[in-house]
Length: 336
Image: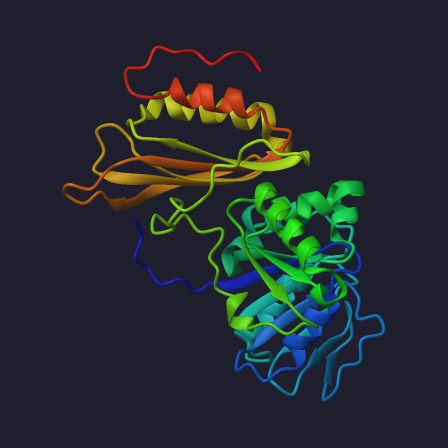
């Protein structure tokens, strides 16, 4: 693995359905003295009241500098173009920031925004996607999840889930919502946020998109069937036997070819036959990356853990196919 220092600017995407509290959270980030220099890109400022701001630019939208050193840009042009301009002005010393937060619209699927940082050369060179943070309204979130496909996609894509407006919902309802979110996305940490109050540091540097063998997937729960079935759900596959790398690559390629539009996020730490180190992988829809991880320690129990989050994925087919990838296995996955 490369040990070169990371110089690209980390990016956090903040998403959540209409009324979930994104703007309140963004305004807290812009106004609080958190000691960080953050560039916030919003779709629109709307009626937001920004105090202590000095107008810097007005070509593709408004770019304002906050008293705490943050900057805010309203997106009225192309996201890639604005990101490129921010990076150039940062290099030239015209703007000072070390993290970017992007707020999506309430009805947006975060996947296209996230994919920008893997496929657009200008963004790949200057930025790295750190995480997707999704807000869910405790009062109306369950109804939004029932009715809106995009609300469910926002949950499935998240690295961190924030439950807002818990003061407007009963504690039993909030617990039920929390359990539902955990079933939909097993790998995302869940926390509560009140009126935008949260530790900004807890939302940044999550490294949710890094191929990092140190990420511990062992604590992920194995979710069983439940009364409320969402089209987006997560499941974990664990395997103590080593995988045959050639078989595994072939099967993962089949999964991506067949199910990429519905595979929101997937990640794993793999025990590969004949290799002294872990193999780690992470995917977003059809974008799949792998790299060597840490070496297994002498006497350490070697095993694989994979987590898949997606829309209507045939869990049994995934499990059978992965079993067929175990070294010396002759089993064949049943047709989906």
